[in-house]
View 1 (cartoon, rainbow, N blue to C red):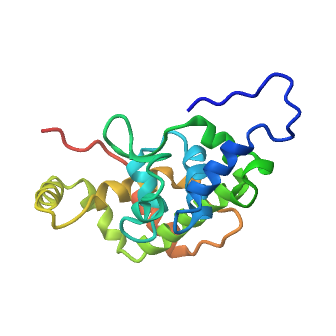
View 2 (view 1 turned 180 degrees about the horizontal axis):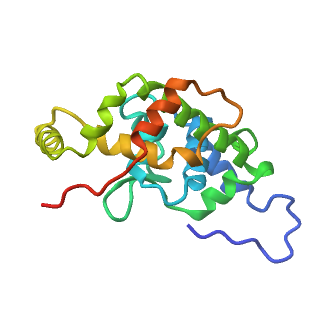
Length: 201
């Protein structure tokens, strides 16, 4: 998709047609503002793996599919390497969403997107802190890992252990300074924050 501003154009919004197109497509999402928030949050979270990003953002299984299923002409849920992620097909879409005068009601500021990521990490932390701290040694127990891989290959469970470790690894970047964390939250995090190399077969 290649759009150029005509030289000497007097139009106050030379991208009006493109903006109308993007807005119309985005509004077919069940939650257009949340879709825009996910996109901005993905930019803020940088090099975090796409699958982990989706795990943090989703509040129910396959929420990404629910939000973006009608936006397939603009956004892919699998990146060029075949991994789960959020991939914009057109850079001009990101430019549109970052223009306060262009995206208007769909505009999500970096501050708002950052608060969204803080909220999601907080909710994930509060949800995970209910697990016993004795789970920590099991994360690197070879027998537990083998059993987990076997059950995962049979479709019985998801990638819960790697996800849990990644939460601990990235949490320090996403602690909300405006929230109160309980002692159980801190204890849970500290008990899981020591990382070792997984056994190599």
